[in-house]
Length: 237
Image (cartoon, rainbow, N blue to C red):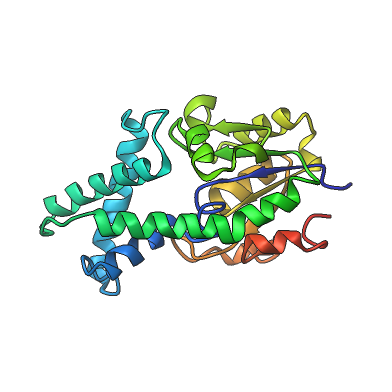
């Protein structure tokens, strides 16, 4: 049975081509000379700040529907800054970190993601399935990606959140397709690939630099190292 439709993750997939967002932040902090994440203690502290910010954003209505991606990044960096300062870090300007992170995303989308979506959208209907804050339509418009997706299944508005397999079933329903004819592409083994497979979808794991080393039990999955590999005829049968 051939693939008839695609589900795409956004964060860590379309925006960074497989690079977990912690590593995007870590590189920017290191380049700015704020935190040297090559030191284990500093790496652990920044990881704690990253988790702290993500949890705050998940619990509190900080991100509005009209927030751009840049504004969303700014909100995350403010929360990280406040946490780090509370743990003894000297106050610092977030501007260079923000510019670095945003530039990396715009470059990745222009160089990798948009060309891939251009090709795939000619062959498949596509739906975005993402854990985000209710502003994904604004973000897609910001990057000129709105036209590629039939709709968006976003955790903040769908009432279900990854890794619940139900969110992927919502995506399949939006495509009007049975799960076995749909392929999910995402960077997170635990939040994208395993639950999408549980929902009955085919999966393609974008295996980049994750939060931690991936489980060796994933070795038999269909795996790519860049979204550009989706254009190979063997990748989406």
